[in-house]
Length: 246
Ligand code: 6PG
Image (cartoon, rainbow, N blue to C red):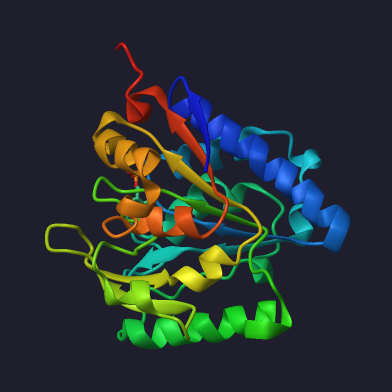
């Protein structure tokens, strides 16, 4: 785990935008396209805004392909839709072809159908198991106060999924909206670069457990399951790191 402690959420977002540009350039140089999976959450929002404000000419949007790590089961224009958030802050502001945007269909009446559809879409795009070793060039992930990431919540049966890449899940009571679609661990673990964006003091205690003993934390926190399974970059602010004097 590669931890970068940065002053605040805005600096985390700018560092995430820098990393996006670097990974895009690397992927475009080597394979001619860049694939990225987005997350919901407050820090990714700042990252999308930061990226939209960068010099658009530096980024080859026409060969960028956008996916999602999770989606809430609401229509795509809904205030709680992860797609809507990314679209408003970034996608609608850059020269990204509509066909390069592959969202999870949170509006479907049966989330299991949306999950199966996304699983099939990913397998077709990335070639399924076996024929390719990696999925996204970059996956951006947040982490909740309970250690969830994407919509993989602690104790979720979706954490054990081995044969499908997307799953319909329910967030714990109190977390709304409860119905979600999420990537499972295999396509996350198989991404080329995995980056967590974690800010705010409420994340401190879970983050401290993961940093201290990732193997022990993995039985409790889905984010730690990923951290022990592959290399990961963590962009965190001083509040989440517990080094803030504010
Ligand atoms: C979602 C997210 C989720 C999020 C974390 C952190 O759709 O809710 O994808 O995994 O990233 O809950 O969110 P914050 O950055 O807002 O704390």
